[in-house]
Length: 184
Image (cartoon, rainbow, N blue to C red; front, side):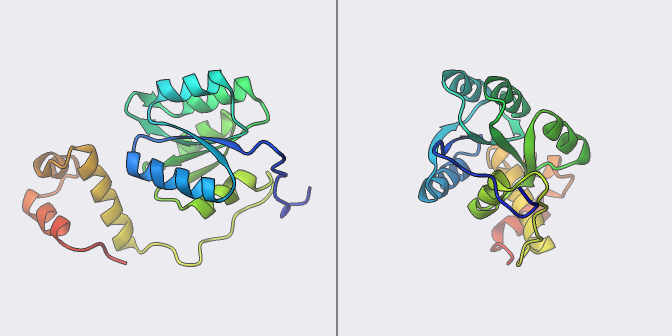
């Protein structure tokens, strides 16, 4: 395999997607099915671990932080049950330490949310030596900020005061941001 050759998919195109953001999980599952994958989903670490024990898939896409623990536990169990499986970690909270830990546990890549299905598939099938090219149209800094605020807002149960507190932002400033459309 040279550095631009993708990994052969073979006959087993099973993929486990573990994410606690239900709408993102459903969108990614539909997009992966449209690309020929057989998709299984889980919203918790416990459910993800049960699905791995029931039959480890060839691929996995796992959110780093889930409501009941770390997605790295799912990666670890997957690599134990199926050493040849390829997994990637998705996260909205990227940092170097967690990326290194994910790779040490067997993840082949680490993508920041929101990642689209094409990026996910490219990461799953890329060879180990292949370095992905930068995106053609990356999100603007304003859009990244808006996405982060929206995620925290949803995680806080759409409570403006709690979201503002967690973001260290004045509540009225947050209300103005939430009232506007998403930047491009």
